[in-house]
Length: 129
Image (tube, rainbow, N blue to C red; front, side, top):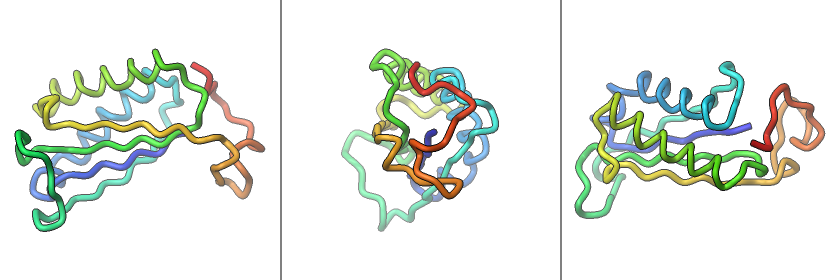
C-alpha cells in the first residue's frame, strides 16, 4: 500500500500531472512491485504565494511525499528514490536539484481502508521487498 502526494507551482504542475503520475507510478510498480492497478496519487498545485522553496531551485521545484506500509528494505527505498530522480529528469526535464522526495513508513495497523485496519487486510502483493 502506498499513497503519494505531489506538490509544485500550479503553472508548472498542472500541465504535467498526467505524465508525472505515469512516471511516478512506473517507478513504484518497478521498485515496490505494486500491482499496476494500485495508483493513489494526489496533486497539490500551489500559487506562488503558497509555495516557498529553497534558493538554488527553479520554478519547476517539486516535492513528492510517499506514505507506505513499513516492511520495504533500505535498498528497495533507495532504488525507488534513484529511479524517480532518473525517470522524472528523463521524461519531464525536472533536474534532481528541483526534486525532493520523502518516504514515510507506517505500520499496517495505522492504515484504514476497505472498512478494516491495514493489518487485517490480505493484499495481493508482497510488502517485504
